Image 1 (cartoon, rainbow, N blue to C red):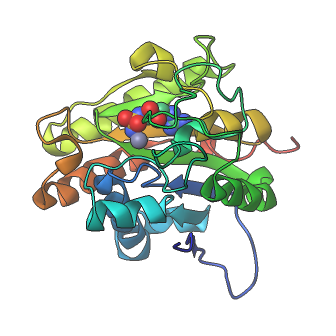
Image 2: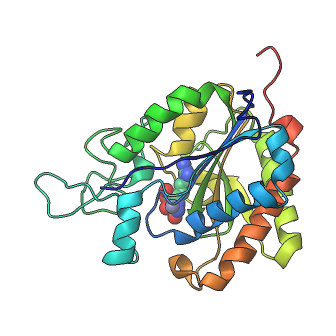
Image 3: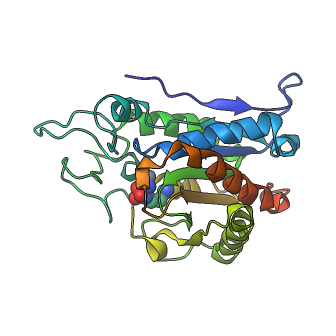
Length: 269
Ligand code: 0X9
Ligand code: ZN
């Protein structure tokens, strides 16, 4: 099986000074190829594009492929594979949905106990080595993370936690404002329209997702969002390569529109 890789980009590596963290997770669902392509574009923009200035205030941690075994499988065997590749005892069906496997309200809605289901939650929370490892890693930096962004496809939506309940998060109004302004900035680039709202109000209840675990566990987080990238179904997961750059450019416009003062840690908290 493949290693999980994280790219850390910091302007202050020589002095060892650390900044609040923006953490970006991508391609946790194996077939959502546009997400690792856009994560790569974000890395490019941090190093030599319009995101460079963000490095004055933040360190970036980026997991371009959160499900590397599944990702390899989409290249070698089945392009539309979603889950991990772990074997399930007593079943011929392989894999767990990594975005139903986090230890937060695990298996309370929108997931399945059937190993053959595409939303199989696993035998227990954190049964998947990918999710366990990400969580362990995350615990070492989690209190310094200000903004967590998870990239998925497709649907053209900005999704807010919670995923497990229709209840709104305490900061719902502020999050909605960020998502709305992000969608407006995004649209100016290529005319692409994104919708926004909480996960259950926009798509469906989904428990055991990364957003819920992270927002529930690390009180210093100021923003935790899921972006469902292009498209709205024409090509779906099979988005053509020539859509990579425009998808990245418009998302970066949304990211550049965020008022980063709102995302910085509250002094004294
Ligand atoms: O069902 C999902 O896991 C996500 N949609 S997808 O079509 N990409 O599978 C939406 C869940 C959003 N929740 C989190 N990102 N935590
Ligand atoms: Zn997904």
